[in-house]
Image 1 (cartoon, rainbow, N blue to C red):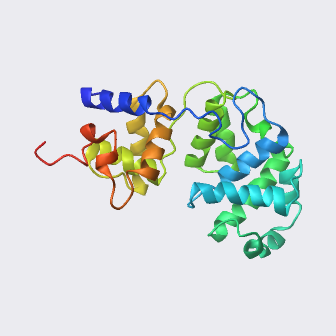
Image 2: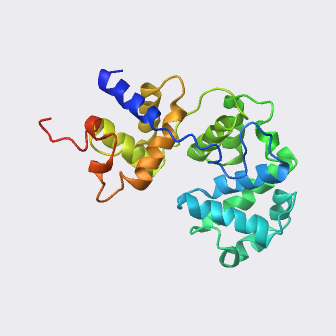
Image 3: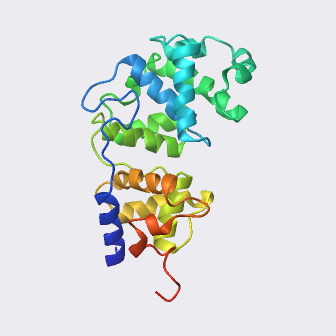
Amino acid sequence: MTTREARIAQALLAHRDTDQHFWEWLVPAQPPSRKAANKFLLACILDYQVRAETAWRNASRLAEQILGDPDDLWGAIASASLEQWNSRRKEYSLHRFTKGHERVFTIGQKIVAQYAGDARNIWQGQSIDATLYRLYSLGVGEQISRMIVGALIDVGLLDGKGDVKADTHVRRVLGRLLHGREFPADRAQEAVDSARRLHPENPWLLDRPLYRLGKSVCTASAPRCGDCFMQPLCAYSQPPDA
């Protein structure tokens, strides 16, 4: 790791938002109820190619308003047939893509069959690697699985280190910082590997400051470089001869 990379890591960590209630339905140092854990996992599953706030709002609406906030959320979802579930796509308006709507049902069926409809059974008593494997096997997806594990680390439900979720914001900010251009979607692993190099002790700790910058300052168009605390170290904002 170069001196510049070390300074980038230090600056990001210094500005990490440590909001103790960042993850809805998860309370630090407090084991979640079955109901809370299931709603958290539902929101994470919906956080797929849509705005995060939309995914979490729709998870709350489905669980609490449409389905009546059941203890057995996944059982309620999986009680329909796939045809019935898909017929409710417009009514539920959970996701902009048909696949995004359908995967809630297909993953839900697996959670019912393999984990008794209780999301806590996916991670309780498990290592980070085992939890990731279980999430991958459910079809949650690589990046979302990393986010779930990171959230569980944040609130003390898993112990160890995780990787960043290389979403559009993280790829953009990290790529611009290091190379002056964002990592494209088909090179997400390069973003993950870069975060590992910057902070090998726990790359996940870089996720939130990168995400926050991407949402508020380092936007896809018209980034506000003058308002960014990373500007002195950023390859994107420096002139070519700097």
